Image (cartoon, rainbow, N blue to C red; front, side):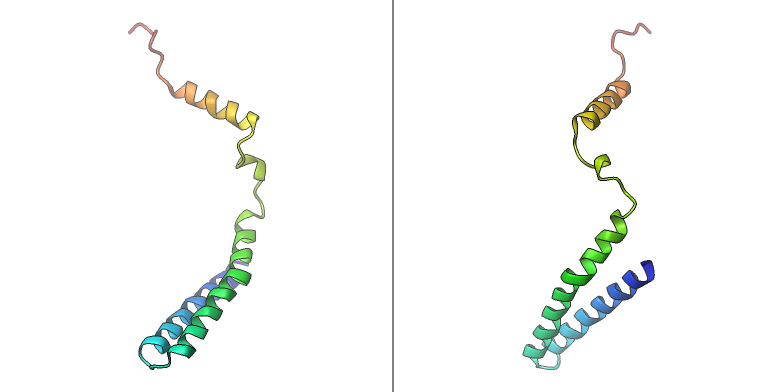
Length: 89
């Protein structure tokens, strides 16, 4: 999956470069805009979901949502890090 994502990323990047080249230097603005638009569409429809699936496939969504249990755990961690002001030195 990692190799596929890298290949898609570099093909999207090269397609954008080619689109901007046609738009600015070949004086074929319509073709350049078509290449850029189709590249953006491809990246949103195919690349983005594959990338998100790859990044989130082994993760538990409950670790990243703010539930009451996670909120209490974060509060306890913050209280542990606070210095105790009542302590005599």
